Image (cartoon, rainbow, N blue to C red):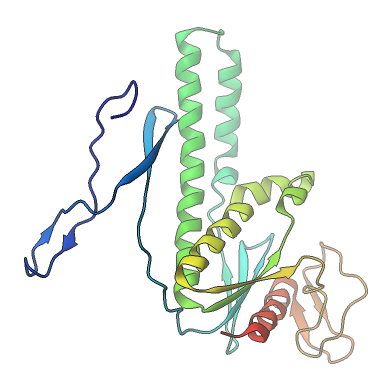
Length: 254
C-alpha cells in the first residue's frame, strides 16, 4: 500500500522449480524493503528495493578493451588483438533541438495558471522524457554489451562536471551522457566481475604515439589526426587514445 495511491500490484519474473518440471510459476521470492514513487510528465513510476543474494560472477573470457570517449563518435574501442571500433550514439537532444526550442517558446507565451499552459508544460515534459529515454536505452545496452564481452576495460577518468562548464562542449557531453555512461559501466562491471581501470585524465593518451611511445608537445583539440615524427605512424586522435588506454588494461590483466 502506498500513501495517497493505494494498492500497487507487483509481479516477479517466473521461476522454474524442479518439483514442477518445466512449468514456469510465479513464486514470491523477495521482501520489499522500501519503495520510491516518482512522476515523469503524465506517468507515475514505483521503484522498489528488495534484498537478493547475488553469486560472485565469473568474468567474461573475451579480450581486454580500451575505450576513449570522443566528440565525433560517442566512443572508440580498441580491443586486445588489434580490433578498433567506432561507437556511434543516437544524440536525441541534437535531433530534437529545434522541436524542443519551439515548444519552449510556445510554453513561455501561454498565460500563467491557464489550462493551455498546463497542456503545454505536459507536452514539453513528454519530449524531455523521450529524449532521456532514448539516451538511457542506448547507454544501458552499450554498457551491458561491454561487460559481457570484456573482462578488463580501461577508460579515461574524465572530470565530466568540469567539462560541462565549457560552453562549446557542454551540450554535446550532456546529450550523449558521458557521466551516465561511466556510472552505468561502473555498476555493471562490479556485478559481472569485470575489472574497470580508470586512467588519470592528465595522462597524454591522445598525443602519445601508440606505436613507439613518443609524446607530442602539443595537440590542440581541433587536430583530429597526426603523424609521429619519430616512427612515421599516422594516428587518428581517438583511435590512438583508445589503443593507449588498452595498454593500461593489459598492464592490469585479468
